[in-house]
Image (cartoon, rainbow, N blue to C red):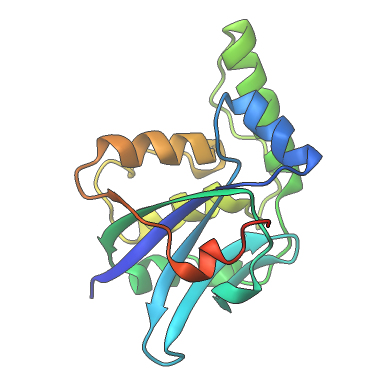
Amino acid sequence: MSTKVLITLTASNKWYGKQIRKALKSNVNHGLILYRSRDWKDWRAVDTQEKGVTPAVSAKKLTRIDYAECWECDLDLWEGLRATKKDLYKKYDYVGLVFGVIRAVLSNYLGITFNKPIHAHNRLFCSEYIAVVFQGAKLAGTEKWIPANISPKDLQDYMIHDPHFKPVAVPAPVKDLYKD
């Protein structure tokens, strides 16, 4: 069953967010999925942060951010989440994040590319998780992705060029997270 979701890409001005964006040559360093919950009657997030993948977090409880952009699409979110249920509440994949940044630096600044994913098994970082959800939901064009190699910038590029995604205004609960 298809659900309207917002793939939300964000930026933090914490030191690590700045370094990730610099390595990726990007304006975003984090990604999450927002959906409107009928049960809770508000926006909910499927997010991957320090404590791992957490489903159905109130969007009001997300970390404060400095920038956000939202991309709307119809997605079989529940099928995508079913593909990742073994990953819920597992710790964050810091190994994958670090090697993703190293891979981006090698590629963006030295022209060296490699596709072998280096990451902690049974752990996910934010854009890796979204890639797994996309694959579980059978989103066209994602079937050959190596999720551990997908960065927030890769998601942004994919959504810019895929007609199933359209940029939309950032909803109020996310705007409320902006720093004053």
